[in-house]
Image (cartoon, rainbow, N blue to C red; front, side, top):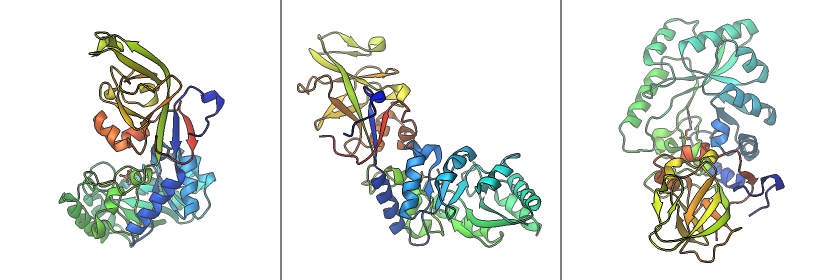
Length: 372
Ligand SMILES: *Cc1c(COP(=O)(O)O)cnc(C)c1O
């Protein structure tokens, strides 16, 4: 494991493998022959560090980046060349137009109000301004409804001054390939698009790419799969694991049979036990719902988390790992225990596991290696 900065000694080490992320991007490109593949890097590249991840993907050839919020785009823009499109999924809000224009950030227009705002901004700027248009086909979250599109289509001036780069929509259930909603959304998208000015299309998120021809468009928008989350749940994960988390053992203690561990004494030793206390907790995004359900690896052996997850500490039953001592590390996340597996134990999805990863870890950008 690479050495952490001295100020982070005693903290867990989060390794993030930029080469594996780049390899995942190339893999997705090969699976989406109908058009280029963007990088969705919202929420700090799903917790992995957009400032590191996005320039690496741009070096690999990626030319389209999506974030959720304007501030995320403003932070990234100076790190990327002029040839890279930086788009804000949440769109433009009144008063923010100038920032978009000055920083050369492109909004995704999600409703008639945002379309009108961008049309006015273009008129004021005296030139056409680029934008993407999001049409809703079933998510009912963001995006123009079919009725919105119908109304806008009645007025030839609706998109005056707007250079429509892409019309996009977002799948509701692309990770469930058998769900008829996928095909229904694609059909709705085709109908809606026909009423709009000609523009390229953007359809698939990570799982959408794995729908094959149904998910094909002029621009795919994966996030999760880049970061190693399984885009094909229930089947083997085709993506490379890009993170590992190794937490130092602060203390190993003997606990007599009948004694309890942690807050509210939720775990009781049934035999004389050895408990390893490690430096990570729910304040680091190690979800409290993993209390009594988490696991870690030590030299290839699985050790169960016992008792409650605390704010800064976790306790593992290492009775069956007699060679473990204070100063060793336990693997909390990695190829042996990928985010999807930990998520299942926590009752959530891998997206939440990654985006929760805390700020206190020593972050190292380097290869992710097997634990033992
Ligand atoms: C988050 C998001 C994506 C990426 O989805 P993944 O499932 O992470 O690949 C694509 N498009 C939109 C509109 C999104 O909000």
